[in-house]
Length: 310
Image (cartoon, rainbow, N blue to C red; front, side, top):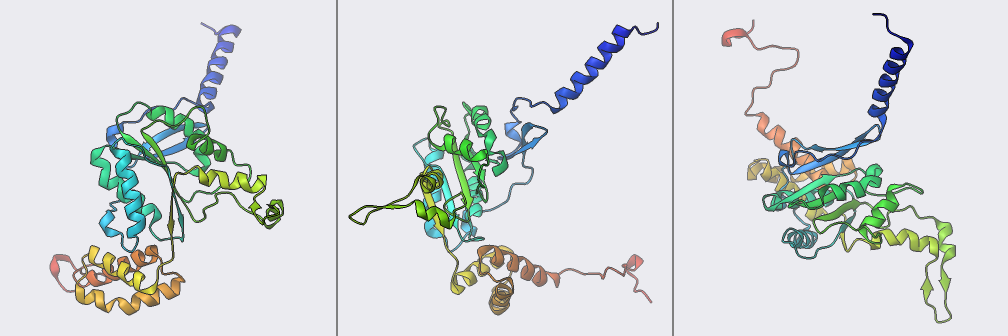
């Protein structure tokens, strides 16, 4: 039977609706919460979803050295949160590679058995924070929404969404949600020299920031707990190197032998951060263990049946 013009029109309309459904935003659906202790918020074509993290970083709090004060404050706040008593949103700021995000991962592993879960959100997707908060509302787990390396440029929409969720919106985050963010700077919006002109001075010498400066400071102030990190001294760096070498199973003799090479490694990288110490330890431990493994050059193949090649 030959299709009528009406049949063709209906078919084309159905095809159009199918294409529109593919690009239109969809409500955020709940994932399989038992699939992981950590999730990433992903977004494509206007629709977002939570992706379970298959391999969560095995970071233990005991692995992190020379940040005892910062560790104590973050662990105490996280323990309060997991216990269901009041706790604060946290902003971890300071020198790069000093353990800010590692401490958060360590807390996740420490308290996952007691119901702690983590949702990692990119700063570009912060505008969807209200949807995430609504999704986990009423769940028995305790959720940390984590944003690494947080900072905003002028006019980014996620800034106001985060500001409202932290404090100031009629729709606040539930008791089972906290925001943990890391940043290399305490004030999360860029600051310019010309903004200093907006400061006012009273007759008694008191200084008052102008409205522009107040706006830029206000987001950081909405985090109830600030934890600052600082560059490591040479001795602190060496302690961290030794810790990671032992973590990778290196002998004490090799740990001592690694002291000078680790300083050269840091000099070449221009940093004595914990991240650089970890990277050196992986390299040194790999070379230390290589003696136990038969390494065949890439242009050679092992002889069959264990026979030597002629």
